[in-house]
Amino acid sequence: MTPWRAKEETNVTTTIEKSTIESPGRDDIEAGFREEGLNPHTWGNEPGYEYEWHSHSYHKVLYCVSGSIVFHTEEGDFDLEPGDRLDVEAGTGHSATVGQDGVQCMEAAR
Image (cartoon, rainbow, N blue to C red; front, side, top):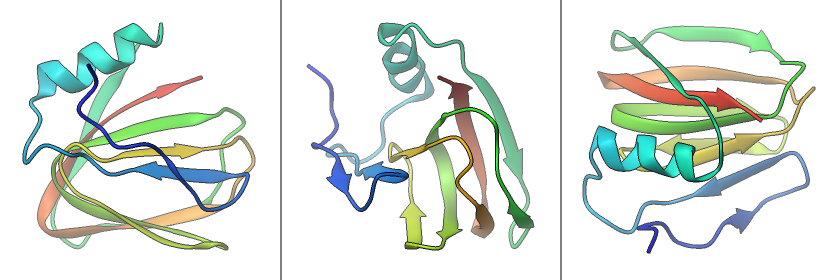
């Protein structure tokens, strides 16, 4: 059984799943990717780091592993904490701001 709530549909380009367990581990998150046939990689940034507005040519699947990050889109802001998942469709413009404790994320292209 997957420890995440059903997706909250916000529009056709971005969806978020909030974790239903307090702090899922890196292994649990990676297992979720593997169940979907995805090959994730990890990255992280220091507190307050800001990503400029950009988009990708692929569907991005991203989990927050530790810390926090806010993704900004034309549809609104998406606050991610450990275990939360964000799906961003190809071509969707977004930027991001890392939270006060920094962030570690795991992501893959679909």
